[in-house]
Image (cartoon, rainbow, N blue to C red):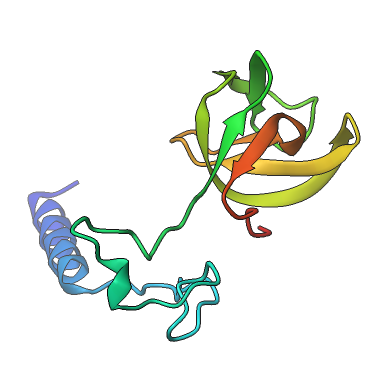
Length: 136
């Protein structure tokens, strides 16, 4: 490749990077179906939400506690999928959403766990803390 071709490629690449750096990415509407005056949890936002400590009214996760000694968190909402990690009894998990799947001891719900791995756990062994998670 000639020096002229290399220079042309370098200039084009630089221009492309400069353009990409100035473009603002599109942001999806992620209000999770909230309506004005409603924080998505069935409670109105008001001045009473401030009690000297900041309360997060824009919460994206639900919480659950593990109720079995060792819970396999998996790559998909099925018992045959790869185990990502194990959670211990009493561990608090951040739950993003729920889906229906293969029943585990009579419960067909699976929770998507948002702990950095985005694994799945059967709802049969995770008790909700607060409201039930939304559907995925």
